[in-house]
Length: 181
Image 1: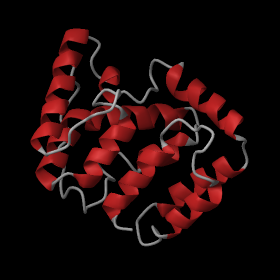
Image 2 (image 1 turned 90 degrees about the vertical axis):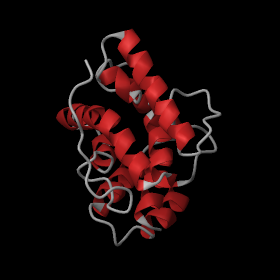
Image 3 (image 1 turned 120 degrees about the vertical axis):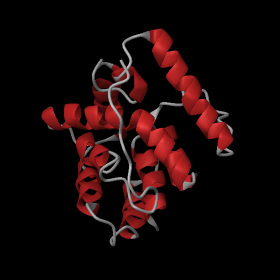
Image 4 (image 1 turned 60 degrees about the vertical axis):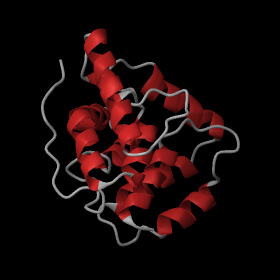
């Protein structure tokens, strides 16, 4: 796996855990192909967390983490834009970047949904990655900080997603801009 494939792997790990989700052994096989990447131990730590819980426990913890918390959800622009009109424009901008890069979003998810963002970053060219990370980078950082403060196991994954640690294969240098509010 190359660095961009790590982003796809993170996208899988950040999705809602449900029946039929990949088995831990399959996830470990995929993770073993990431040995050469920095901070790979974050993935191992998260897989250890997964390995000690049932699918039902994981689903409940996922909902508690991302669905019931105003400050820890996977819709990144909601962490940055208290004004719904401004957020709507940012979402439209993200969708336009996706379309310009050739990604047709045929999902019911909003374009700022973190697993979708990671999928895009995994396939997009460097310029498109930069554009997206300029918009969502501060929100990704904010989400990571919130999870880290709560000692939440998902913080290990989010640390791999923030612009300062997004693999060089995706972007060389990313300016993360400021708050969108």
